[in-house]
Each structure stands twice: as C-alpha cells, then as structure tokens.
Length: 535
Image (cartoon, rainbow, N blue to C red; front, side):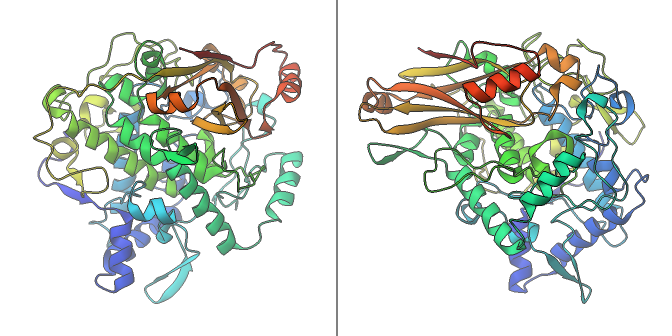
C-alpha cells in the first residue's frame, strides 16, 4: 500500500475554474498551472518530467518497444483487462510528479467531468483550451493547452515511413488541426490543412462543437429523438456502469466476446475511445448539418501521441472516476471496491489481444490482477500490479468529489444486478480487418426505412495505430467487431428497414473503390469489408 494515512480529493477542473473565475479562491487553479508548467520545464531525461511521463503511453518508444516488432511500442494497455488499472497507476505517478514542484505539494489531478451539464452543453472547460493564463502577474502560455516537444521524437520502425517522427519544438494539436509531420508528404499535407484554420478561437469553437455533438449523439426515428439509439458518449458512460462484471466492463475485446452471446454491454473503454477521437479529429457521423473536416489528425486521436497532450490526463482522470463509480455501484454484489475478478483465459486477458504486448511483457502471456503495470514503480521499488490499486481510498490515498453520474451514497444499491430488457434485435458487424487501415477509425450502422430516410443506429470508435503492420503481434488480433442493440420501440418504427455499415477512416469513408486500393497496397485482397448480421 502506498498511502493509507490521509484521503485527498480530486476535484473536477470545472470546480477549480469556477472558484478562479468568481474570485472566490484562485489558488487551486493557479497551483495546478504552476505544477504543470513545472513538470513541462523539467529536463526531458528527468523521471518526473512531462516529456518522460507523457511518453510512457506511446512514443517515444522505449525499452523492448523501441524498433522491435514483437511489441506494439508504448507501455499502455488497451483492449485488455489491464486497461483501467494501468491507467490508474499512470495518473497516480503523474500526480506525484505535479506534487514534486515546489509550492505544489497539495496539488491533486483534476478530472474533466465529461458528462456534466456544462460539458454536454458547451464542450471542454476553458481552463483546458485558453491560449494564456495569468500566473504570478505574468501572462504565460496555458500549460494545459498543448505541449512543445523539448527534443525530437524519432520513429525507429522503418516500415512506418517515419509517421511518428516529430521534430524538436513541435506543439501538440487538437481538432480541427493536423499534427502529421513525419515525412515530406505528410508535412506538406498538414501545412496545407492547418492553413485553413488560422484562428485559435475559431478552432476552439469547432473543437467544442464537435465534443458537444459526440456527447449528445442521439438519433431520430419518425422525427423524434430516441434515447439509447446511437448513444452519444454521455449515454455510453451511463450504460457502462451497468456492465455485469469487471472483465467485460474493463475493455472492448472482452465486451465484444460477451456481446456475441448476450445482450450487449458497454465497456468503459468505448466512451474513452470516443473522447479520444472527438478531441483528436473525427466528426460524429450522421449529423446532416455538419461537413466532416477530413484531414484533422490531432494527437489525442492516436495511441502513439495521445499522452503528450495534457488534456489526456484530465480525460483519463474522469475515466478513472467512472471506474471508481462502477466499483461503488457494484460493491454490494461483487465487493468491487476491494477485489476485481478476471474471467480466466477470456478474450481480453492475453497480451496479444487487440494491440500486442507492451514492453517487458512476453507475447502470449495470460493477464490477471498480479500482472505488472510497467513501468510504474511503488515506493519500495517493485512494479505496480492491479492488486495494488483496486481501492483508491485505502491503497492510494485519494478519492473523487461527487460529479455527474455519481452519488454520495451507493450503499443501498441492490445486491442483485437489475435485469436488462432484451432488445428486439441485435445488429452485429464482424470481419473488419484493421491491418491496412491507417490510424483510428469509426464503425457506424445506418438503417434506411421504407420511405428512404437514413437513420444512424450507432457508432463505435476504434482507437488504433497509424501502422498496425509494424507490430507483429498486433497482426494476431486484426478483426474489429461491433454490436448495437435495437430497442423494441425503435424496431417497430423501422420494420422492413435496410441496414448498412459505414467505415470512416483518416482517408475518408471506406467504400469498395478505396478499399480495393488500400487492400491492394497492403497485399491483403478481400471480397468483403465486413459481415453484417441481424438477429
């Protein structure tokens, strides 16, 4: 155990922002800015520097991940049962670094309450997007808006065509901008794209509108919005709190397996993915009054660079909060505040699942609560494991203020998981090969009714890499699957509808012509982009 003496509170960034804006108490936000400025200015080789900590998620690849195609590259765990606990340990170490800055010993990492009324209406809190901040009487660049690389990041994987290489002085970007600068072709395309968006205030407005669209994401049938159909990120967070066990709650791979034989569950990792794509560079599909901004390739949209944008940690702090809310909600039934059970040898419990193993973990290793959460060390020098960070209050010494979707007391929550009404239909998409698709992408299902009107049924974001082929073990899990439940009320209104799938990639919508080009280039010919099953 790391800290059992006191329990300190992580507040939402909005709480700090409102106290600052009102003049009631400016110190908490000022100290947060001071701490972030401090870790960003540390020498890049300092273990508490933001460059070092931000780079643990993806690039710059270190350890066995550096240029070794047996490992995906970065240390982060996605698509497996370590996803929530690895990121919990990650936030804890980042928070300790913030507290190491002189005068910032009391700083706690705030969360961006993504399902709060303010976020749903307005998008990202302005403390995370303002250009500048007044600190100690001096106007400084806002430490939470972006990060300037103190040294070059060099892509050591030759087949990547230097996709991940970024020069010293590069500043991370968000939607609607692009940050691909690793080779001459991408650099020229990025410069041309970004020239269309020269005004930071306009760009922030576009970003916030995209976040609002993603968060709300309801669909209409018969002119009426249908709750639960094409759920936005808000509803996805609501749904994930009903996941029946830790294994399927924790990650997309396990949930996909569960959904093949049961009423669909929403894993925590799915709304997490969609926030990444919303901040990094995808418009929510199905919004007829919006024109997708193709070419937006912000750093949050890819595993390799997401951790270098400060907003990553405020997003993941909220994901960790939702993890804790799930634990509190299911504690009477599962004792989930103090133990997390992994279904043995289930999809999502092996190092090869989804992304390939992380550095320091052998390929084809079964994962459980004793698996190392590398590279994070405890005070005694041993590596964190999931069992070290189950109860955040007694083991790590922190808790969360009561934000959206939480409540002060969960003790009356029923010990029996409430039955969920079986859907009228389940629409399953299988067989999507992600190997030749560059970067993250969206899988959406649409229904065309008897009047020829098209309705969005649902969208799943797939947080992927620019070049999956550069990771040998990623090749063992190339299939992407998605499942969408159709409620009885909606099914009646869509009687006789025709269903189709849209795969939106960084290169636009993947259709037969573009797919043939992509698959020809990768020497992976296929007759079908996907399989669609309605049952």
